[in-house]
Image 1: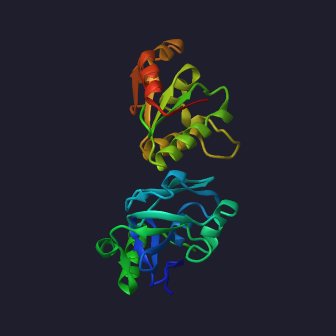
Image 2 (image 1 turned 135 degrees about the vertical axis):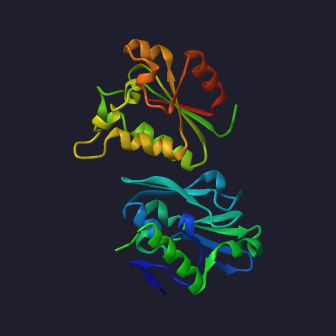
Image 3 (image 1 turned 30 degrees about the vertical axis):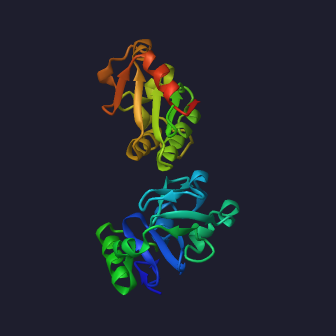
Length: 148
Length: 122
């Protein structure tokens, strides 16, 4: 577990840094995805809704395309998918309490689980491990973002 | 009809500040969901596009001005169209409006409405 500029960034996740989303392989054909603590900060710290587009469920979403949306009083925007894959399941708990994605973004606040279409090729494009966290740190420093 | 095109017709203006944030918010949200979103401004809605006007309108006291919501929608990729006749209604010239808006006739609204999956009016 690494804390960079007040942002909690675990080293065991694959990050699509520019979009502030993560992916965690759970098995051969199952990857859980969510937003990072940085996204939580940028969205204003309190969400009114986090909604996976209904049409996406059971269908393929391309890496970088909108998987879900976040709404707060300060911000509305997409949650891009960190990988290309079929959306198998969404975290139903977020409908009742979207702020779980803020308070526990890597645990109870996950967004969706996907069957990857091209994981072996795509994971090379994601930031991972100590090196990945260092790359994320560089972005936070370049854009003067901090979570504290 | 296109499956991913939607339109928001904006008729509310400076006289009803509380009606002037949500349409832009919905437009930004639609763009975030990867819909192709057009806002069509007519009647008093066109006044919101007058240069400097949206900065002076506050939907909520102490909150953000309409210009913030408007800019968020533009940043999200929403297309702004304004009805030529509505500028005449308010004695405006097209050059009085912000640069990001394209002037069109009323027939464009009908054609776009036919082509859109969903049309909302505020």
